[in-house]
Image (cartoon, rainbow, N blue to C red; front, side, top):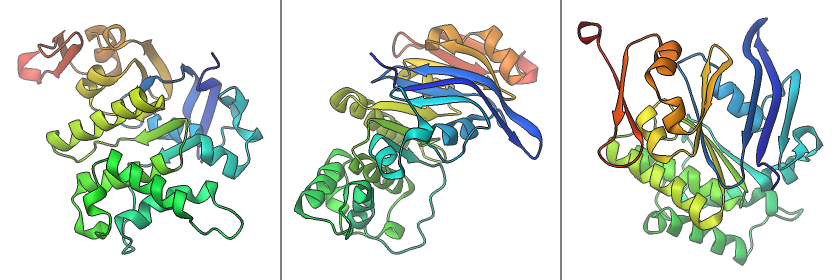
Length: 263
């Protein structure tokens, strides 16, 4: 089967400084793939390259076997949906209006939604547990609810690949788990490939099929959670003492950064 995403020797620079240095990755179709690493390691830059927002001056990126530069804008938006970490909600759109924005790549020349578009949007709200808030304005929602609205909008694109930048950042534990369970259901019920940037190693351990660990723009390690989340790799990556043991909740590791006084 053709991989959902492949990169070969991706290089990217900001103001002359290398942010990504020959990054290679392969994401299988239907996988839950997490990109992790410390601040400034290039995680968001890599995700934006996969989303077609940034173009890497060196290396190759392919989506479902096709180079990203060969996609038209609308065609690409039917295949890949991107949910950034920070989304401005300053305009007083309702939940259903926001979800319908995801239908844009599928609309005709007049850009007018039809009955099927509304049904797809409502199905996305039902899937994300927001149908009862369809006519509520975004500024009247909690942070977790707003995040689910933007995921619903991405679902409305009917993509094959969903890219998310820190979707659980600044959310309380209950909302974090709701978002992650939602991502897992998308993968299982719709066969969607999920590629997510996350700082939370324990969440990554519970949900990811594979983890790519970055440091200073380079790949430190890639593999299953149990292969990547080990003390040697984590301490090399984050520069602090880490304790790793078996999580009592299941067959995946649990990571605990140790303060200096305990190391």
